Length: 345
Image (cartoon, rainbow, N blue to C red):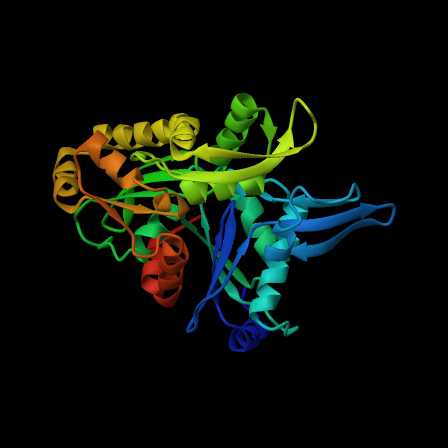
């Protein structure tokens, strides 16, 4: 609905592109580029007076697994979709205000990236939380499309662009041609499931309990899909489940490879399935162009090599895999023609 205030608000505020990820939220401001990258974590205190937000982002993530009973560190986005509506709204409002230096009259136009397998109900939840957090207009763009634009793939051309976007909650595999998604598959197996697998493996194999943050740190430090001898090792600390006391052990990259095998196999199967159903003319293009790998999962050592072994196709890792989605959303925001073609209802 148009009102004279919309013009005023538009003039007062900068349009935003938000990659609302399971692990991190990244914000791009029109004309400025990426201005914020923080973990999607909110710390809230619950008492008789209700719920109060204590910290958001980096500060809240440091509290994960370390809070007293009445304070909870929540990750409101699970598997790429909103699991806690109110907390997501509080988080979005905090990020929007932080980017705009807390000016009160801020009603930006916002484009938010969503997983391609998202339902209408989940889309409405994203849209409504952004509107409640102060957005004037909300556009939604599918993550693989945003990642393809952000990786500078020629999405408007009549050629196949295949992209694998591995985030925290979902892995998106898509084939894009003529500004449209020809095929997409979204599997809810990605970075978070790998962290969980590492945590369970160490519990089972070494009788050691570790937290989510430690599991993520192990994956980022020595996680390797095809580790070479001598294996990289890492010292980790946790609680001995037999004795009940804190303990330190050393683990190797070969153990982590074993721990995350199942998750890596699911991603590879999704890629193979996409290749099987791609029309022959487009499949021929993929042989020439290769497959673009983006998202935080693209940083997992030797994942590109394993994908190449399994598919025989060239695998290109994006220049800045963590930012591809938000940069693509930002480019769409700058170009209204593209924005209308690629947004989803």
